Structures are given as C-alpha cells and as structure tokens.
Amino acid sequence: MSWRSRPSAWGLVLAATLAAPADAAAQGWRETQLGVAGVLSRPAVSLAGAGLAWRDRGRTRVGWVALLGSDENGGLVGRAELAYHFLLDPAKRLGNGVYTGGGVAVAVSEGRARPFLMLVVGVENSPAGRRGTFIEVGVGGGLRAAVGMRWRKQNAPGR
Image 1: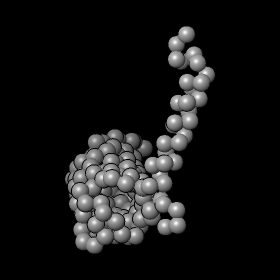
Image 2: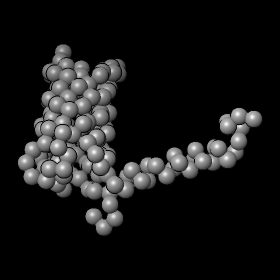
Image 3: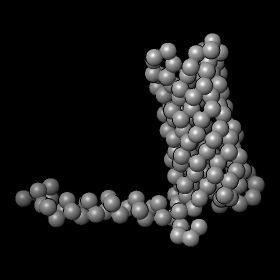
C-alpha cells in the first residue's frame, strides 16, 4: 500500500495546506495600490489602474495589477500584471526603499491578447509605513514606467 492510498496521509496534507496560508497571512502585510503607467512600445500606451499585493514578514511581495487605458491611436487597451518583488529594506518606516522583481503581463488590444515577461526596478516611500508613493521602471512589452500610491495594512491582530 502506497502513501497515496492512505486516507490519513491525504488528511495530513490537506490540514498542512489549509494551515500554512493562515499562518503566513497573519504575519505579513496586505497592500492596495492606485497608479498610472506608460509603456513605450508600438503603439505607445498610457494606462491607469489598481492592484493588490501580499508581503511576508521578510523581503518578498507578490501582487497583481489591472490597468485600463488607450494607445497613441486612441484604441482601448487593457493590461494585467502579476509580479514578484524582492524588497531591499522592507522595515524602513521613513525614507525610500528599493525593490526589484519580475513577473508576467498580458496586454489586450484590438481583440488580441499578448503575453510578456516583465522585469522591474522600483523605489517606494516608507516601505513599512501605512502608505507611500512608488516609482517603477522596467521592461515588459516595451519600456515601462509606473507611479502611484500604496496603502498597507499589517495582518496582525489589533493593527
């Protein structure tokens, strides 16, 4: 009899899977953001949107952003991004913190969806504060730049 056929093994795997995200979320941060972005490509695109992100207690953030805008020809453009960021100084309450990261983006225009790999470098104000601004540059479907505001909430009880 293998471990795959034992109901108790499946129960342990299920319990560990359900318990792990709750523990990680209880000690991390939730972030929401609003911002604008521009992508220098053919055609050039300007966008505005919102996003959500989750940070652990360490130096990592995973988040997604949904953006809507237009290209230089006046066509409607949508873009969704999923990114992983590595924060160099996540505990800084005052001043600026640098981060770098990568991910995937999907741009939709004229009924076509085009996927891209993304690489970014950014600077954010007060990475451990309740809110802060950010500036980001990178590549992914063209040369990309974004600016905006992030609001943060620590996932600990009573905060």
